[in-house]
Length: 327
Image 1 (spheres, rainbow, N blue to C red):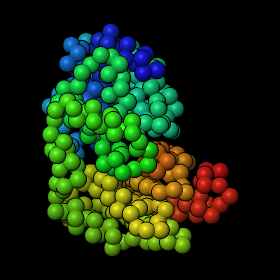
Image 2 (image 1 turned 135 degrees about the vertical axis):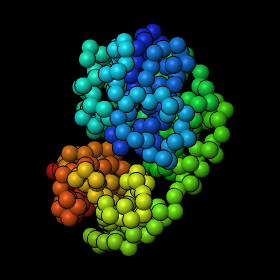
Image 3 (image 1 turned 90 degrees about the vertical axis):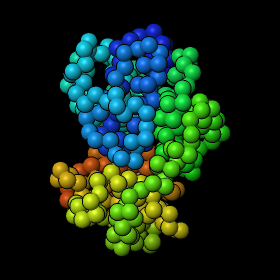
Image 4 (image 1 turned 120 degrees about the vertical axis):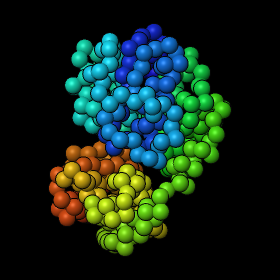
């Protein structure tokens, strides 16, 4: 399948590149990396994103090229490439409204992806979508520039937690080495992602830790953040990204859960696990998705109600006959 996508990238023209709502580092790195590479190859290519980009990622090359309304693109694209979007309805910018006569290429590494594209390049064994894009570009004969290398490296280290998460292997590190060989300053990436937060985030973390509940024989830690917490600290909701990982770091804890009240009346749930629980299956049973060790969902239930449901599913997952909470 890599060869088919590489052939399209090499021979076709007229691309829109899109990613999922609430984009993280892999989503944005893949979005801008692919759009920039296609432009370098002489193609008409536009990154589409219908929402504000978190400040953490403002260092990424290509932000100034973002199109918020893809219907303004003329001529209309022949191809829409969705990157790191596990579900079609999760694509930022309302995919059906701008696909038109374009064909959809679905490039993703989430195991819950239902293969919604006309062309599907989905590999759950990949640690990031960025590494898949790197491979497709390599097979298309493209040589990484520093800007594209920086974007793809951002995606790679974000989804591997700085090469700490499960699934990292020699191939992952080799990909990272190839990206670094393009010549960008790697510390600019790691500084922006891991060492350059507003002071309010530290205070938000304190609030999260003060509210923790330790459940199920100390195997689960759950915490909740509310809209007022962000307002009082003058923070955006994106400033809480990856705070959930702090809950999983405790010795003996299998699952960390962070429930965050959103400004639009919805609630976001982030889940991280270590060994026993497949949180992607749990999230999927509630309309979300993700990876075995990192998943999430968005619901119209208030924090108190979704918290109760999550506890019930985790109890079944940990103590039931199977680790599959949907069974």
